[in-house]
Amino acid sequence: MGRILPSRIRAKVTATNSAILGVMKRCWWAGEDPLYVAYHDHEWGVPCRDDAKLFEMLLLEGAQAGLAWITILRKREGYRKAFSRFDPRKIARYGEREKQRLLANPGIVRNRLKIDSAIRNARVFLDIQQETDGFAPFLWSFVDGEPIVNRFRRPDQVPASTPLSDALSKELKRRGMNFVGSTICYAYMQSVGLVNDHLVDCPQH
Image 1 (spheres, rainbow, N blue to C red):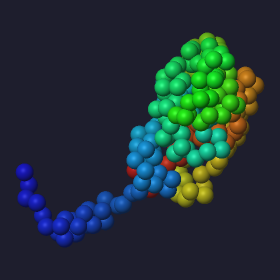
Image 2 (cartoon, rainbow, N blue to C red):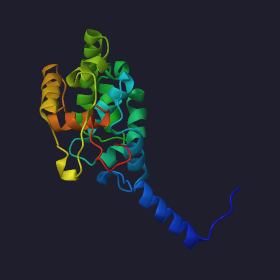
Image 3 (cartoon, one colour):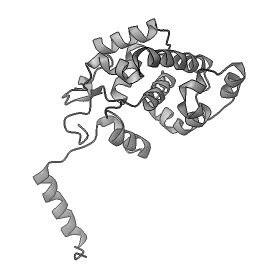
Image 4 (spheres, one colour):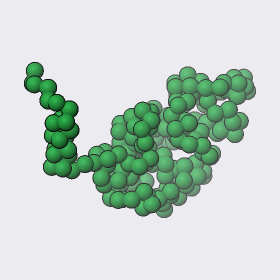
């Protein structure tokens, strides 16, 4: 084991290494909350082609509408338990009894419209899976199969929506989904890695 340096020397070495390597910081929104930091470092902007995860994020993004994302992250496990571990086949069969159970569950956002939407969207999700041999091929077709890597340097450069999110929103609505406006769709595209909007000085870019 190497010799432990005095704290003032360790600080000097750290500062020197930072100057040599360049200091990179996380995107502005990650803050210091452990849930946010973990989500930023390991999920946001990472290309996902797994239908189970794609459905989970679709449900959660719809639940987030009008709320802070950290609210949903803190309730994520509650959603996992309440919504059959995000199994769209089970959720698609939910009836009034399940709706009442969900409305009484403090572990999720108890909004009837969002609960109804989750069930409706699960059914449409399954329809798309059957039609296109998976939801991932359908979703990734909007970016020709490859993630869009942006090179934004400032938070004010990151858009809330784009023509691509407009197109995705329009198609999902046409198929019958709810809570899939263009802004929600762009957040979804960011979360599952269709676009990489980490700022260029972020280590996850």
